[in-house]
Length: 304
Image (cartoon, rainbow, N blue to C red; front, side, top):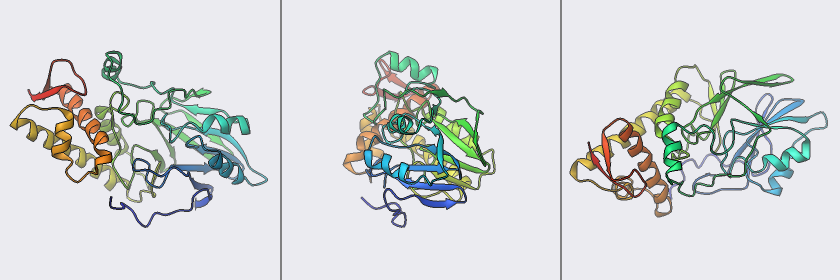
């Protein structure tokens, strides 16, 4: 697999300064889905917010605690969403520091009515690593403000990658988690992921003048609005390719993925198939495609 960003090679477990009052610690969990690993962010000079402590890894817990200077303490632990590369270390970190865990809700929170119905009907995810046991101490809603000495964050509920996905605005800087990354597009896997919500979240972000996005994985996104438009265009291109393929003959999400994702490594094809399913559910909601039988990951879809 071609390295999507060879220039991004931060040291693992080291708190690197990104801006005044902001540091990043890379977790030791590289993979095709997490790139170099999860980015954990420390915001503040005295009372700190930790954004996405990451996987349940004792070495990463020690790295976060070791980054605290004598005058510093952790005030809040903020979770963008309940995937196992972002949220499991929250509880051990809370127990070590006494700081509360803040998030939109548990792993099923924030699902659209369509995804709730599909989940109730038996649709399950594709093994993306949902942290099913995650439970925050404090619930955050869209627009809620969290603050400490010298900093203020606004929680933005921006579902799509996952129903409970939050981003955090720090002035014109956004901690974009897995909604917007520079090295890859986000996985959208129903019923946890919802492409209709994903596109709405991207378009919502276009309404504000951001300076930089600090993503959950990979390097900072230094031209946020260009990246947002590129992600929207990418999804619209996938939609067009799916509709074009279905014009030839009805078929399944997996078969469509094989036809459309021609340069994708075999290990990522299951994720590609889930992305196609997300598009098909979105297109079904627009009355552009119809499943033959019940709506499912194995259904045969046709143009309406």
